[in-house]
Length: 521
Image (cartoon, rainbow, N blue to C red; front, side):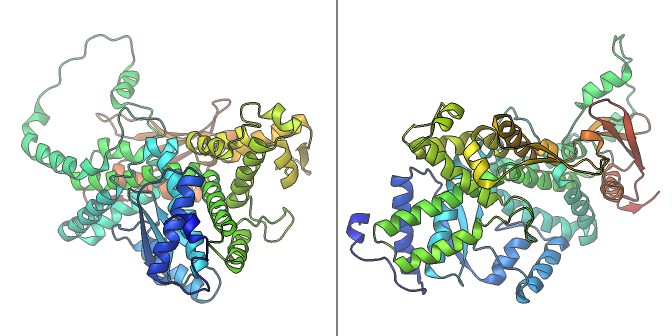
């Protein structure tokens, strides 16, 4: 049945839904999304869940299957209390970057909200997951579900064999270092999570077959003359500096046992899986919001949904993209849904009805004619930082009333750095793009040296931007987890990225030597 055949009457009337209506509406949304918008998506799997199940999904970082950890239960209890008291709402959906793409929708939603969620998640987010270069480069949508199953089973086996407390210690430390457990640069080969369970078994068998304590007593061959210092050679052999702290611990921590290294590996893979999502919030939500708006709009034009259903969808859509003014008590920063959707609509305008200003600023696609082709190209080839830097137009800057303010803590007043002129537009765009640069948003920590044959002290550096050092309490808490995993003293030096001057130094020794599960100094 085509949309022409179905346009005689709306697909549904009223708020109630059932699975037959869901299937019918899904088919109509799919036809509009694929044919009219040209979307390219993974096969879809729609799961209807309760509000309690949605809270449970919240607590386990949105994954459909995950190992147990006390922090997940803590999040569930907090979110449930707030939800029951009416102090917070729940997301209409959760979508998983997997193949097939899994979208969770709540049974409490009306039929119109189910249609909006399907268009938003099962087609908008789905298309972005499948086509954006960061997700292609860093995630394995084909293997993530199998890997989650393996991870849950492996953690459960470790709990049975080594005890809940021992496993919890490792996971606590790994979670604290999770944001520093990613590779930020392309690997030589793509990650294949389906093979991780097989590799884990092979690593264990190899260790059992090859381990021989006598090798430790064999004297090492004397080093030949080298023009490089011992520190240079040591760093080269260890691959230092290394920004993926969990990876280094997994490979080099002297006291960790093989099962503990595998737990670090599991947490590291999960952190890598979420790495692209931290860099594409504006684009991902903007893409999904634009898609649901366009899809439901076309369905309304063709008579597939009623005027009442369209108004209900617009009401929800308007709430999602609401952006309080900077002096509004509700202001909490720039709403990624609002900025993303506004930029998608602005790109459509520039591609179809450009002004002279648009043609000057965007000669490559102004007047292109095919707005969806321009949008699909942007969704595939940019991340938030580069997207804002490339596509934010002067017209949208004026519409959103953006300006740049310099707030120097050493000065008694603030200074307006950029206003609405050509130079100001470029400065505003540059400054806004920088806010989405992960290199500016997260601390640049790297392991720079360790003498494994000496005192085994682990040395890290934090390259501080604009002399902004880490919070003392947070830094020591995270370093304590790092020292516990390493088993020896850890030193963090904070260095000014511009001058190289040392700003601060933190030294932490192990409290609990995780590899031996003993308490020591």
